[in-house]
Image (cartoon, rainbow, N blue to C red; front, side, top):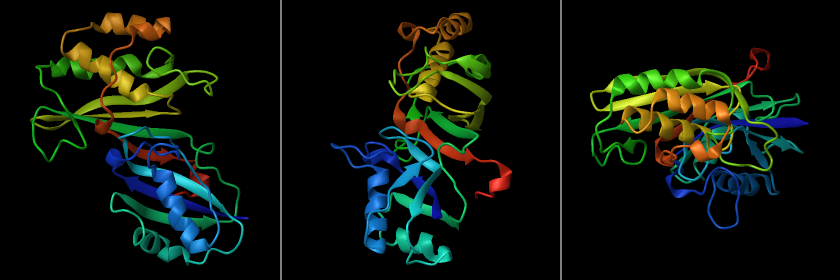
Length: 252
């Protein structure tokens, strides 16, 4: 059976998240509607990451099983799908492979970014979080070290009954100054649990503004106690940047 693989970018502002849900539009639903029109029958897609409401993506990956030959040539798939999708969802690349592939389970790592700024501009409002108070950027940078390595992220997550464990191996967690008023976090891990990045960012911002200490947050991580979490950072600053797969698969 052939597998269709899509690399997708989207502005999540107007959606309830990636996954289909009864009370809000979703990215998955919009793409499946277009695939249905093209194919004449339902094609279900599976995403590598289930981004929440308001979260964006630059490098989401999804796959779909094709029961019959797809009516659009591989090279033309992005153009044809994009001509029918809303402007805030774009197919960046497409592949059709003839081996078994799963966008979520074959992924070996994922990378997100989170952007904050102190510039109250209309051009920054949808893709970054405005920080209205003074923060210590040296503390912000140092706080990122807390989360590097293999940890149980129960404290910095939302409860999810489908999650069997909350252990994640964070390979990269680093803040970078983009401009005088803008900072961006890069965080890469073998997996992420529900709400993890926004919880971590909330804690780091609390450290940078003097509400919590590095020692306190380190202890909270070790204790695996959700009562010690900081407020979640807003969804709009979060972007799913890239999904990593074994090189032998040659996925994007």
